[in-house]
Image 1 (cartoon, one colour):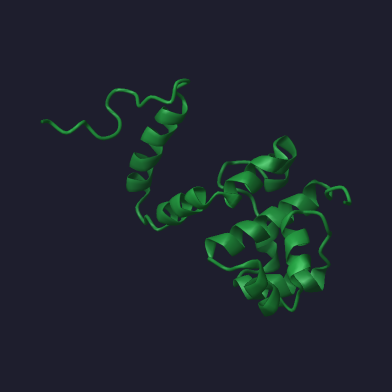
Image 2: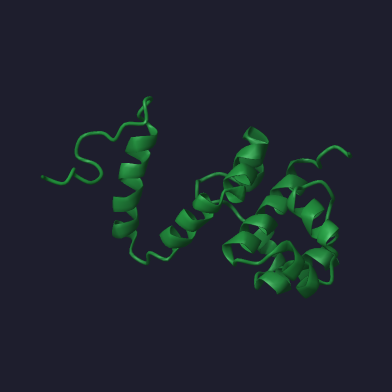
Amino acid sequence: MRPAGNAVTRSVGSRIRMKRLAQGLSQERLGAAAGLTLQQVRRYGQGIDKIGASRLHRIGQALGVPPSFFFEETHLGGRLVEAVEASPNVLAAAMADPLTMRFLQAYTAIDDWHRSLRLVEPVAAIASQPDGSVPMGHGRQPAKA
C-alpha cells in the first residue's frame, strides 16, 4: 500500500468524497459519470493519488461544481488544508458514517440561520458533556405518566 498523499491531495480527496456522499452518489456512479474506474474514485477520495487538472474538471462536472470548489475555504473559518493537516482522519471518518451524512443532509436543508443555530447549540452542549448527558434545558423532556 502506498502512503497517503500530501495535505492538499488529502484535502481535495475529502472534498470529492464529501460532495459525492452529500449527493448520494456511489463511487461507481461517480466513476461512470467522470470516466474513471471505481479504484480511481476510491484512491482519489482517500487522498492517496494526486488528481490532474483535467480529471478534477471532469469530477467537478460530474458533481455539478467547478474545480475551485475543491480548494474553497471551509465554513469553520479555516482553510480545508489546515483542517486536514490538523486532523486528517476526522473528516474522512465523519463522512463514512451514514448517521453523520443523514444529519448533515437534514441540517443543510434548513434555510433559516436562526433555526440552524437552534439545532447547533444543544448538539454542541451535549458534545461538551464528558459523560454524554444532556445539559438541563436541552433536549426533550421526559413524558409524564
